[in-house]
Length: 264
Image: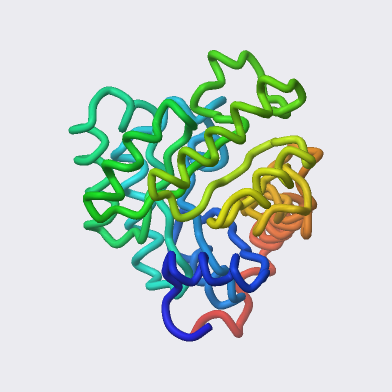
């Protein structure tokens, strides 16, 4: 696939049965690494609140936080599709808020925005799409609604929850969303949703039947000290980085660094 990815590429990949691969990124260097590795899409997620800023949830993340990190990502000029998360209360209060805040991300270089929610936000999604702003949906576990949910858990076990997810997915597609993230959705429900849509589903903790997958880059690289059951850790970077820093501290204290090769 030559050139920059677009939402049309995602739709075509769904049609051809090609898996879409996404990761989060929040800065310039990680974006360069992800893009050179050949990632299809980059989500500048409000998960930065937890893995970058140290919050317990994503709720405190502001528009200013998100704009700062989206700008860092787009400065890497990636070929990957860049999707910006709209943070909590940046789109719920009014149509005007939703349109104004979403447009800020597009103006600084994001290719699309992502909104959490299903049936209840379909009208807002349609409004944004009609204004020329591509939208990725997000159903299943919605971290921005964690206070209402009470805890992080898989979604779709009951017939009522499964029906809501299916109806929400169809409503988002009809509203013009170009793809939908399915987070912690039971795999049989995720499979049914995926097969019922013409737009791609991107799974996180939702099994193998989605059209693509996404993980938080800090989780899959082992940069976070905690482990999640739905994440495969491809590296233990937290431990490796700690060991390297400990070695640096030791060498400086013993006078081994800098050596003659490091100065003139």
